[in-house]
Image (cartoon, rainbow, N blue to C red; front, side):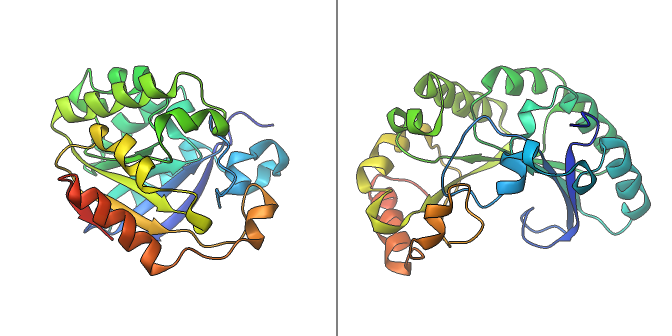
Length: 234
């Protein structure tokens, strides 16, 4: 694997950064193994040809050329916090006058803490994914997930940086009201989005045979979060 080729680039996105036209950089590799993940090529990057990826320098050249029409840059994945050069990359993007949104699973609070040390490396917007009740993260390959999620959520809240929380409504009642209750203490007054699972290109091919989550699945979870005093969105 070419260690320099880390990224898949989406040149233009209208949905990844709220209210902004953005370029999105997807990092290869992830420290979780969510069977429903639809970024299979990123999570299993070792199985994907190097030519499918580009280097951070190539991505920055693209961003610099288009910065006049861009409103921001999204760092997603995979999991961006696995990239040791993340602080320098954020600094270089922000030096171009563009805000940075970071999508993360929260499994690396020590990386978030490092980013928050300096304004130049602090993301301008963060989306924290909440997969399941923290104790259930072990089925996704996580170690000490309760501690890691709690620390990440607390760090994000303490910085005052704009942020949101995201969960995926899963089919067959695999994400339940009990999961919402267990995650609720991590969620402050920022919006909590509940999206619907759609099969296709899943990390575990078995999930491609599952039915799509229905509107009522998302509505039920959002209602539960609302009853717990959370600011929900769909």
